[in-house]
Image (cartoon, rainbow, N blue to C red; front, top):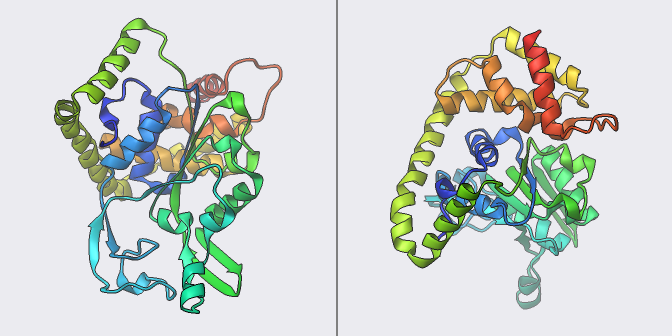
Length: 334
């Protein structure tokens, strides 16, 4: 059965917008979605995968190389034909071993043919796509360390069992989890460009609509997809249009100053907050068809870009998103 359509997800607008913006500009750095069970986190990721624009890749290339000359030396590609294929969305399960994540010696070839060959891992398959980790806050520490290294360099390096392998590993990291089950390590938390908190809908009409759509998806799948499939295609076309506009979005000096003022006022660590705010604001402007980044764009996406970068204030009981919104109003009013 095809995934539940992204466009048919009821509410959760901030989560859907964050995922769309990373599709427009993967350099934003990924999305972290924290919230209650059953709030559509995994559904949104599966739905996003189905509507993402297809990519050009060499057929059979384990790292989804765009051109034949980019195929790694260790990879065997029979025909070298460039084809269109879906944007890869790869699951990284919690119990995955290090070998499965980064790749390792191909034991079968070693035993049967005596060849020392490399078997690509999940990081290779996710190149130029998405790597999805459900319950990311429960990920083992040594896997977290691997992800931090690769996220920093954009390259996976394997030095083991007589192998010396390097390959590109640039992907959008999407993580979801329940905060009640444990916190995320600060080093990994900082690697996510955007952070979104999702909750169960509190009004009856919205909950009824969620139930109605899910029931229709399961009981009359064909009709449901005929209704919502075209809506997904509209979003795909909008993403493609926004990608074309993105390089043309200009950034006035005063908006750059706003980015810095806002991050200083919030006390966010490092400069990654400003960079993420800038990239996400431009992506939002492109999504709206605007050619100039403005304060309005920054104010709209500031909570998603900055809430997970705040230092904890034991005297402030407001949620991090509320704190960001409050300081945005103060900075922009000034």
